Length: 132
Length: 341
Image (cartoon, each protein chain N blue to C red):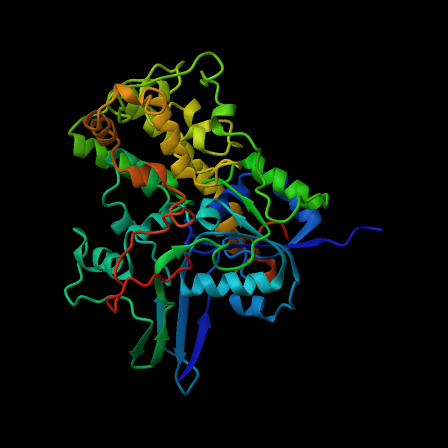
């Protein structure tokens, strides 16, 4: 069976590979998405200090580190069985709102946006920032 | 006549993508970059594929910024490919420079990582116990995945590297400085770290060392005390990697009330970052000059206050350190390491 491979998948965070199998008529028989990466946070965070988790786990994804930082922080709240004071809650929310703005700008101008501006049919040389 | 444009490439191996974003964090300066350089490969921002890179002639790329550690066969393959296709190869960011946070996985091997991630994690649902295989037969044909190595390596442990830009991720100023140095054709001799020679302490507004020698008798975890914002964190018993870490960040974390964790890597004159910090800590605890004051038991008590020394002193630099990794038997039951000693 003929296979078409897209490697790597681009304009998103992380590594990905798509293999599409075509049947004799040239139609798609099946397609597979593979993630050819793993760093093993699940293992190497074991044995580290709890209070280091927001800092370590924010490196799961450098495109959305604030989300991971926030999740790690909330896990610490639960582990220490504490509720943050209102000022801390507000600071966290402010940080997250700032991050949402930052992330949307990033996605619009660099990652997904070019698909919508030049369209999916545009040649791939044109589908990125700075060429349009 | 306009100068011929340079050709840049950016690639991520075992990374989080933060280094890629740090390049975009130079904001509108990216427009100046594309004035002097064409970007010919950049998975996070462009649709150029591996097979397009393979078709490039050798040394087609003028400068390749390579971030991420070498964790898998694919990372290694791309490191070798991009080395061949690039005139200048820069290890950009802590992971490609020193192994980085993913390098902490050198406390384990493939078997342990797979077991934890795919089988034994509390949130894992995997009743058939499936773990990744390098080749798997499906009814339409065969699928391949890169091999996951036992040991995380740095870029320089894999291929010849020309320059290093430290940081997790590199600070905007360092990135701009590196780009400008390249654009002007003023790169220093090969092997240079493109960052100031100073330590984080030298850049830190809380640095008391100029005033008087500091001495501590207790070590605190960050949640145990509310530190005085105008006093050196080490002086208050919080482990701050500043003395053993190369600057260039203007002590950014410390200015936000958090100790330095060492992402800038070692200082130029003491390449073993963890050992440099342990030595600094020993003198802060008075173990060097006043050791007669302490019994063995006292010292043990002091040292026991340091929780997770490996994660503390080698958060970013385990693969590039003298330790490199935890010594473990490999799958054939031997201690033979899969890295050069």
